[in-house]
Image 1 (cartoon, one colour):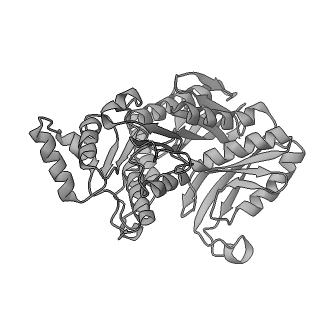
Image 2 (cartoon, one colour):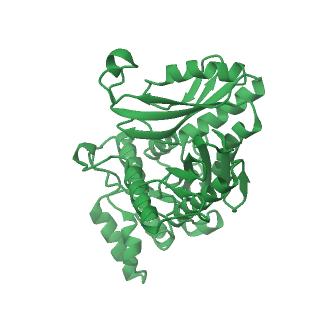
Image 3 (tube, helix red, strand yellow):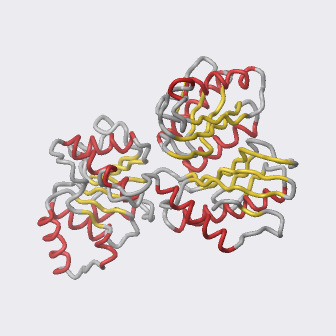
Length: 410
């Protein structure tokens, strides 16, 4: 999310200055690689780059390949970096990553190429997910071209730039399926999938991405320990709202990075906030009665995550007092309550505690346990498992669009 924001901001400045630029997008991967499909990097004529497509290994070569596209209005190209061979260490880039990365490089000198950046900006600004489908490989006789796109907006509006009408219809069906899945799971669905389609006289590969809006984080409490939580969340590009009842604490001087600052008592939250299932909340007021009032409001809400600072015994007492007052949380509501808050990383300083809190929220949003990667069995990228399951489903169903196109994924 932060990367998208940085690219959008930089592109606007580059366009205003009249400088040439190009966009590199990871469209397909295999094996061990640093970034997944959908990772982007903006390349500017003066050598500036924003974002990344690898751990720093590919960026230089990609920039060199982008030069003729920027200055001579070249056509989009897909470059494949294969590091599965040991000879790569001697003859190639020397990555030694044992993976394959396909990168689409396209000049940003026409409306079609720029449309994806504008589309992503709209999704982030409106707080609604959308889908982008990009053709990156064609074979045989087809009128579809590399870097042609289909954009599916949150309201169902379609901007179709894929020339092959049969391919466009099949791609739209898959984009709608992915977007619906993301909406139903509150953003926990896979972000991207590579789909292969058999055409009457050829084939095509398409990257379909779901662009998620910013994670809305609510921080209740404006004490000194809330400052690093806001800063850490902003590093990830989240939208952070700070809420406190003290005028002297809810200031821009204390929280310059907060997107919104709300001065309110817990009992008046509904006048300032509208709950939605994508929101996550951190309660750190250090005031027992206010925490009690906040839990009374937050637990019945559809928030994805509610974390509360303090030991487990304190939270248990809060819940007991709420029950004595007639408020009995359901099992589902308690399942969304995290106390003690944060991952177990031995944090004791405010900055480390903030890291533990934000890391736990990230793990919850990604449906991960937050454990050490070396203990994980199988791929660390859940998208691969989802894609394989989806491919098996499609194969079992014998998916076919009017007998003309059949996805090849398996």
